[in-house]
Image (cartoon, rainbow, N blue to C red; front, side, top):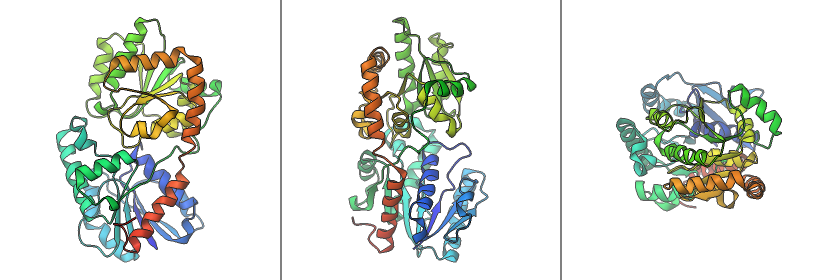
Length: 379
């Protein structure tokens, strides 16, 4: 097969879906990729090194600095380039596809349908764009890849596609996410102005991460004498100022730290140096930070509903994300019960080891094979 992967959705500071695209392409290149020919469309230098000494991989650099220009390129110039390269299967790694009739088969990854389930998580125009573009892509796709059974069920409800068209391929922590000596990890954390002891939360600053309830839970614990800080790592997103204002309102300026975006190679140390990791999100398509934290051996608290519960299973402490009291009680247990932390350390490592990018690459390539043979709508 000749396969094209559209990874032009990766932003300059990758997180979530961007990390997925990077790790998947690299796993495909390093794990059986020589059986096929691959062309990767990219706006950055994420993959330039994988072509060295290889004829089966090529990088197509795309100059489209904004979302509108990227969309215009996708709908007008990409189809012609696919024809010129003789591509059999196109895989778009983030929700959209060229909509015109094409000779090649089309696969799209839909990471979640938050824009349907939690509309307030998106600005109105962005929400409408994501709803429309995802519905159109799902309609023309020969196969849809999703990161969890929760998203599979949501896609079936929200997009009305045939069940056999949707394939669950779990994501994974990258190999760099592994236990690190506390002292070494603390040294890297200090470079970001972070001093132990602290609770870590990772993800963009936006309403769906449910940080307001997490911050209120920390406030309640402070009144009980707990001294851990809360470190919230992630890029500023829509309505992030509300979280900052809440911190001021509760008088937690010295207890809640916003370091911003942290380079991916430093994240393992921030996980490892933390007393606990907390992501009581309202909705996640997979929850990469959850498995990354577990892979680092950090005790995890996350939501008892949605994909985070599916992914964490018995490797984390699961709580009701709608209850400040439940989040508070869960954190109290993690911070005060050494036996619980040790247990979650072991169970988290075991659960995280069940996910791998090599497996994801094999299962993704199996989807390519199905659609190439005209069997995208069947198992």
